[in-house]
Length: 101
Image (cartoon, rainbow, N blue to C red):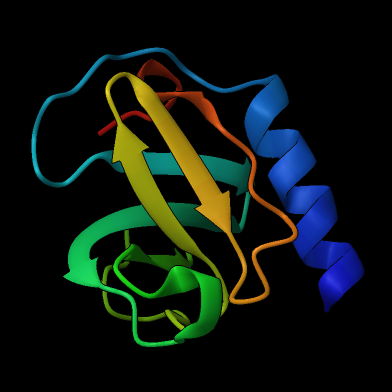
């Protein structure tokens, strides 16, 4: 699972559609045809390095509430979004405008 999380974090930093958002709900990042990350405006519950960060739902595209939310978390600082695991070793800051609604 740790290798998959690291791979996905690398992908997040490399490409996606562009749309800047200042909304509480930051948007989604499509991983592939069957998976997207949705940055939710709810606190993460996985603890560790995610304490005080928000939850990410890993789900099927366009299907809120159908995925997992206890794998990685996110935090926005200015125009950057960092994604991390509870271990904190996989923080990957990227521009917030890489996430789309």
